Length: 435
Image (cartoon, rainbow, N blue to C red):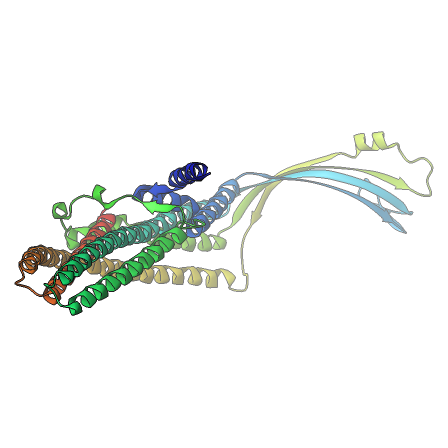
């Protein structure tokens, strides 16, 4: 029975291991691109802009419509010859008409151009949302890796503290250390366990953040790749903020979208002005009908009337605007105001972009300096702890001094890791501005 339970446990553990997916950064980003709600909403907006463009482009095509009616007249009734007769009647009529614009002050041309620019802007909006999502996912991803390493440090600290507790107890039993050192060592074990619990909770929260950003259901089977695959920090260089801004102000999706909307505003002004110009359209049609007079018994048959009553027409229609309650004038002024609004929006976007790049640049500088200092502190703490451990073994250092040295070591290691991933993230932000 015990063997059976052991086999079942091994099988269940192997299945659990296989079920857990280890995600790379690229996999996280790609998955977010397909499932994030903001991305899906931006795709819907782009599809809507594409439909608007197709509608504007197809407005050049002719329109075709058909109609049919059945009417009854009492007293004076119309005839097929265009005169009225004194008789009650019924009539059946049907027809088909075709219309096509030839010239309308280039309104259709400008509307098509404006719709095309709106579509291009919506595509850039989608790129901008993807860009922001990449940064968000990357920050969450780096946080998970950092918390994983902090947890590993906490586990190592607990193991080392428990080992130290056992040695302290042995030395106490041999009479080489006072009993207070045993209690002090036990307190250190409890503190290390508490730190491990806190590190595990922090890791769970950071996993929850990225899982929610990816629109996944649970964090139970989620993990990320080990940090060893990352490029060493020493090989990273900080891009210049001037060159970064000069590139970003031209190539960033949100700047491109703003410039496209400004161009569209100029086209909208031209489209609104087209209402002042005459419009010319082509029309053609065919109509027919059947007339039945109630008091007459010699009404022509349906087939013969259809044969004789057909009428075909075509021609040109010219429409000259004279006065439309100043609507065109106000519409032109309104579209001109949209140009001013969009110019202000571009300047605001440029200022925000410059501010973002400056913050990213100086944050990267600070993170690099912090990392260098933290790394030096960590290396010094490693050496200090090694000497403290040797001194404690030789009886030249107290347990309290050894614990202080050990705590400084783990604190400096944690700070070094935090500075490392902060620097890597800041560099990645600047690299995104240069893409």
